Amino acid sequence: MNALKERFFEVLRAVLPIVVLVILIHFLLVPLPSSALFGFLMGAVAIIIGMTIFLVGIDIAITPIGTNMGKGIALSNKVIVVVLAGLILGFFISAAEPSLTVLGNQIGTVTGNAISSMFIIGVVSIGIAVMVVIGLLRIVYSLSLIYVLSIAYGIIFILSFFTSSEFLSIAFDASGATTGSVTVPFLLALSTGIAGLKKNSKTSEEDSFGLVAIASTGAILSVMIVNIFSPMGELTGSLEISVGAERGFFTNFGSELISQTLDVFIAIAPIVIIFSLFQKFKLKLPRRQLKRIWKGLGYVFVGLIVFLAGVNAGFMNVGSLIGFALAEQNSIIMLFVVGFSLGFVSILAEPAVSVLTKQIGNVTSGSIKPAAILSTLSIGVGSAILFSTMRVVIEGLELWHFLLPGYLLAVGLSFVVPKVFVGMAFDAGGVASGPMTATFILAFIQGAAQGTPSADILIDGFGMIALVALMPILSLQIFGLIYHLRSVKLNKN
Image (cartoon, helix red, strand yellow):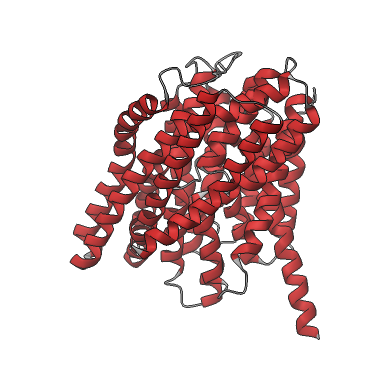
């Protein structure tokens, strides 16, 4: 009960800034229809309840499962076990990610199902699975994270010349969306479980980060490769802006609960099956611990259903309404201000962020405070949304104008920033783009693109998650560099 109460207040503190910001926007800038505002507030309540239950489930089920399976894989001491486990876990964990499902649905909606949600989820999950294997082998053989990421992003850079503008945005967005509330805790625990068996504590500390970063490149590579070898021709898209819930929030919420129950069950079931097989043949966990994990999985299941139902029933729609209204009114400066503000506060509500900051605190023995990491990430994500709104309203400003210099700088900084911060930074890029970003802010940017005559919703409406994944990498690496320089200075004194 204490854990539930603690998580509730943690989530409440995280979601309230977004609610307050939207209410201020309603009274000062964009008067929202009463049905839309009511749906948003009720959706926020559902999100708070769902996220609270979900995070408790993550603590007592997903994290222990990942850690124990990581140790089981490492103790097998067989490359074939690492490869097979990485492929299977990588695929099904990615397929279970709610943020990827939300993005897939948005892509399907905008393109009129020319690109289906199942197609995106399948392609991305294959790419994630392959790169999870590479990430696990890197830990086992103590390969340099910097060189693995440099090679991966080098290949991405080459493929980008042959990828269409629409798929370039979708590829990088898929990378950010797939590293969310399910994937990140599991992969972090998996890498910690394997790295923790190493005798060298410093090597173990460094290798416990970076798997999320390597895995996320798989999403980009797989979408690019599919586009290059199976081109779909020119795609067009549009977004219907709804002013409110026609059937009422509670009717929509009930309908969403039913549909999300099946979707979440399909997503979670493979993880349960894989863990059950590991438990039977390898782990042999005590009955008491096993009972606690099953209870936690129940929390994850219920929490995700309530969370996603709240998002879809009323929360997400307000984002597109605000973006569309500001763009249609040609309120460019306010679009920039609102974009930065939404990015700054939304990162506080991402479930996976608290998981990462907690692990950073544990790994560094509390020397790096969660508040410092959160502040750094907030500035980075706020800047990312600002750049996304600039792409929408400024003709000729393309995604690669940000991504190319950004990732070149990120890779360059990797050679001068302490290694443990490199893994943290690239993992942070993944966790920053979770369900809150992939829902409310994605809708905000797409609404702005729909309301801007010169914008293309397929090109300018996507790509935001890519920038959200990039900016925390840069901001946290710069934080790490400053932290390192200050530590050196203090040691000299």
